[in-house]
Image (cartoon, rainbow, N blue to C red; front, side, top):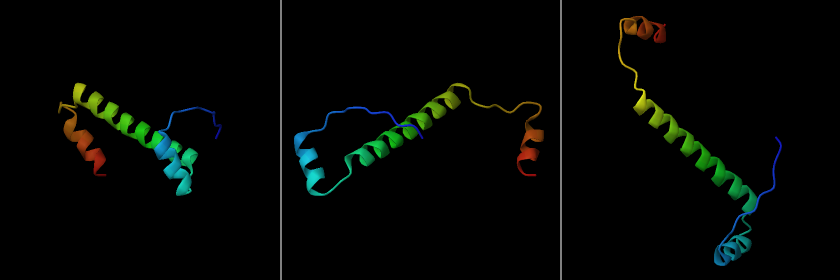
Length: 69
């Protein structure tokens, strides 16, 4: 996996607390961004589903039968 370097701002008090507790800020930031991306993708998928909801049609029963095979 290729990584890129980025910069972000962190409150002084929070940064000091992280240092005291030996929190790996880079790892925590990576995890936070990954969690935010997953949540945004899920929200985007949900919004797309709401806009383009599946509706039963003449082939619906056949498609349902495939999913239980």
